[in-house]
Length: 190
Image (spheres, rainbow, N blue to C red):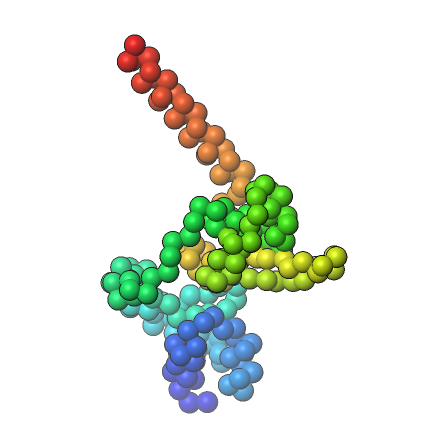
């Protein structure tokens, strides 16, 4: 196929979503090796020097805005900007990120409060998705984070998230330093 690199680039640009080499190969009726070569050439073309980058997420590829130019693009989309996530939604998002295939009831057991609104907001934003229906009474949905979440975090896979234990230790260190700082201020005021 002539111009395979340009064809793959056009498909990636037009779809605006991630796509696998298998999907490209099947749809374009071309050998996987040739698709991989085209992807390699596109990656070299967009090696951070352009306004667009080719990113790989879970063995899938997508053309995205170069992070260096995000603030300029953001100026144009500010009018349609999504609402910021609430603290509750961020809390639920972190629970789902660290516990793939978790149900709403399990999330609520961890948080101690109803999480319907937060889960629905995250689904609406495309940061989490239903990945399974468990074989339990009521067939509850199980949730996991999406590729959009990974892209937003600048990571390729969920295992690149900081380890939970490391976060807990850093939080404890911050609490201790805050406590010491507050006590220092109290004793200096006396």
